Image (spheres, rainbow, N blue to C red):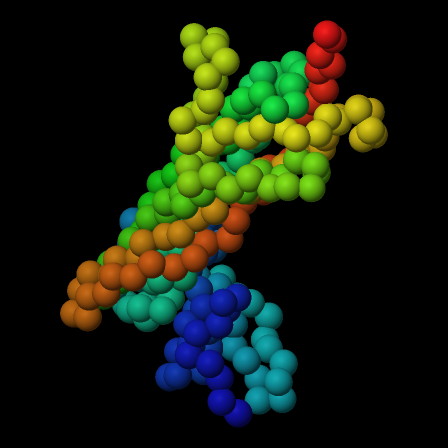
Amino acid sequence: MQWACYDPQWGSFDSDEGCYYRELDKQPPADDSAWRTNKPSDGSIYSKVCPQTNGGQDGAQFVFVPTGQRVKSVAELKREARDRVHLPAPVGRVAPGGTAVVNAPVWLWAENATPPKPGNAASGGVTVTVTARLTGATWDFGDGRTKECATAGTPYDPKYGGTESPDCGYEFTVGSGTKQNGVFTATVSTHWVADVVVTGPNPEKYTIAMPPQDSGPFTVKVAEVQVLN
């Protein structure tokens, strides 16, 4: 039976042993029994899974691997670096915060949309860095339309008065009076890509798509103003 050189769950395949190795993302405390007589400064704890020829697998073991003894594949380093990028879940904000008015400027911005720390992984003279960047946001108010913004938006400040947002504004065309509880239920999704840089014997630079991050639902009340002659 043939086994993949890399498995997203088990890690990289060691053909000499016929087992998969994956370094634990969170290393156990120094006094954990997994270290036995070894020190964290001398290596890392890996999960070791040895597939069986009948298609099953032995139970995962936790083993100590000295630093430099096992060189990881570039594919494994890319996965580790990417997995260490923790994208934030956005929080949708709208101004005016009380009741918006049909055909009047509304400011939109997503809090908690700052790019996270880059993910890094290195082994055997190869280093992989994955750096995420925001490419836009999609707003859905449940009013039959969506709004695409190229940024996370600009937070509103009272000094801006009734002006329009410079980068992420909206105008409702209908009020929310007919909706449940008289409000629109809204969400915002932030969109991301990541720049991957591989340094070492075979350097690479390219960009990958990252999964969108969705906010929890929030409500917006929109009133229709009647003009009396």
